[in-house]
Each structure stands twice: as structure tokens, then as C-alpha cells.
Image (cartoon, rainbow, N blue to C red; front, side):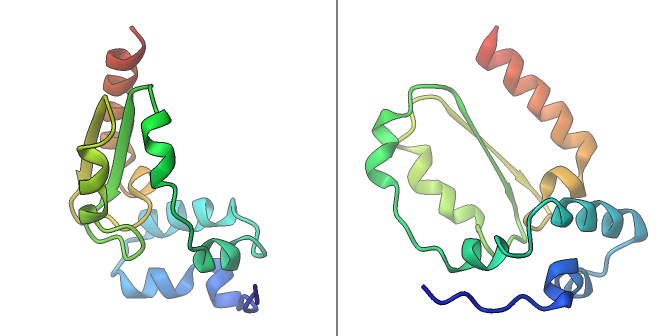
Length: 122
């Protein structure tokens, strides 16, 4: 597999930030989350194409799918096949969020994560 070089703009997430008319707080959270990934890993993630649908029946634990309505990488419609195939699944779609709902709306994310954990592990 050929790995495309990562530009400084991609490494800093500038392109994504410019596409979204972000406020300063969102920009800081997104840049911090983006910094967690090595610049050498990002191109591999973007270039991957694999299918794990055969593994879905092996999932036996509660699953929480979290998607942003504006995510260019994982549109909410991508969850539809999983909703019918996972045994105990819940879905949260964050309106107006991109690929990082946990950073874009941390209050809601943490509230829903706590509720999921209580339901799943109590």
C-alpha cells in the first residue's frame, strides 16, 4: 500500500477546521484530539478499506454507536446495517458535529456515555 505524505496542514487539522466555521474552543479541542494520532498513522487510517461484517455476530456486549451528523468519514446512514445486527445497540447522532462528537459536544457526550455505562454494566 502506498502511503501519501502528510502535510503540515493535515497534521494540524487545519483543513477540517477551516471547513467548519469553528469557534476558538472547538478549534482547541479538535486540535488536541487530532494531536493524539501520529501523523504517520492518519494516512493509513484514511486509506484503509476492510470489511468486518463477518465479525458482527461475535459481538455479545452492549454497543454504543456515536456519530456526528456532519461527519464526512462515517455518515449516520453507515450505522443502519449495524442497528439490525448487533444484539444490544444504541445510537447517538450529534447534530452539527463532525468526526469528533466527544470533542465538539463534551457535555452531551459525557452525559450519554455515563447513561450507557450505567445501563450496560449495572
